[in-house]
Each structure stands twice: as structure tokens, then as C-alpha cells.
Length: 262
Image (tube, rainbow, N blue to C red):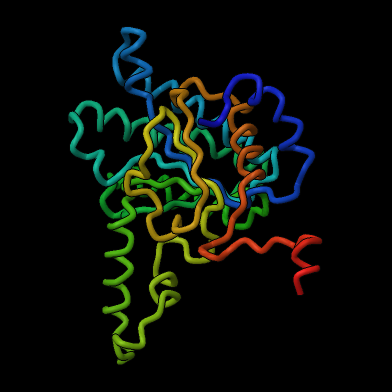
């Protein structure tokens, strides 16, 4: 388990100064809001509210640390099965976040983007999303991708449907990985180097299934509302120690003994 106390405090400087092997794209599964509230005798919605505050802090910390793309898992396709009142509250929080953070995004030149089936969202939120995309589209700072009404399997299904609908007579046997990737929600964004999950569960929960094939995973026991910027820097520091081989074999320089055997 990655250290989260002293290491989180001491890795902040390391993550800011050492740019070698830094993650370009980080995805975060923001988990534990409900459990955080329950442990404190609060209603679940209070946990989601605190989680929203944490998201704002981590966005700024990621931007300050030089991350180019940050994807936040805000609302999954499975979340619709929760209690109606909780879903309604989550929708209001998403609307609040999009509108409240627009000024911050403009100030820091952050580009706002989205992933997921936005057609399944309430019309007012669809409009807020469209406005946010338009007003930040030219910004050159970090790109913040909000995954709303998002599911990795659903994204792949939607991509296949788009391929079928294009009707360009390309034989199905000629279909390549790049053909599917080109029809995903944000095909120009690089795959996540690092996926973080808070609250200790070891699963990806239908998050960026296609894109995360070779992402490094970092699991934190801390509930999402307890996260601070030092925790993000600790995750980045841990990532830098990883040896990413993408299915290949690590090549070590030959030792002196090996050379003598030739």
C-alpha cells in the first residue's frame, strides 16, 4: 500500500521539481464520500458536498504540478440506480461545480471537457456543459475532463455504433484498434498514465476501460473528502518509481560477468 502520511508530506517538493517520468494524464476515481459521511453520523449528501470541495483542491494541485490532463469520475452510468434524492443531489452538485468553476478555469486557462453519454443528462446541465466547453475551448492550460453519465463499456458500445453508422463500406475484418479509438469520447487525449482510486477498493469500476489498458494504479485508503494536495503529490511520486513496460520485457544493461561470457 503506498504510504500516505510522512511520504505524502515530503513528496510535494519532489513532485513539483522532478519532471522526469511525470504522468501526463491522471484519472481519479473519487470514492468514499458516502462512507466518509456515515463514519461521522452525517447524511450521504454531506459527504458528496465535501467531496466536491476536495475536487476543487485537487484540480488546482494537479495544474500546479504540471499535469496536462486530469479526468475526474464524477457520475457513472451505474449511479442512476441510487436513491432518487441522492441522484438529484448529485446532479445539483455537478451543475454547481460546472458553473462555479468556470471563473476559476478562465482565470487559470484550464480547458474543460467531458466524457460520457451527455444526452442522458438533464437539459439544463447539458446546456451548462456546452457553455463551459465553448468558453474554455481555446485555453492552453491543463485539460480537466469530467466523466459524467460515463461508463467504460458504454463508451465502447457508443464508439462501435458510430463506426457502424458511418457506412463507408470498410470491411469489418479490416477494423483496427485505432479505428475504435478514433470514435471514443475524446480520441485526441492520451491514455491515462496513472489512475488513482481513493477509499481503498481495488477495482476500476467501469472507468476508462479502453484507455487504462496499461495505466499504473494507485490505491489510497483515504476517503476522498480527506484528500489534500500532498496526497496527489504522493501518488505522482510513487508513479515515478514504477517501471512501465507496456507488455514488453525490461532490458537491463549487460553485467560485467555477462560480457565475459560472450
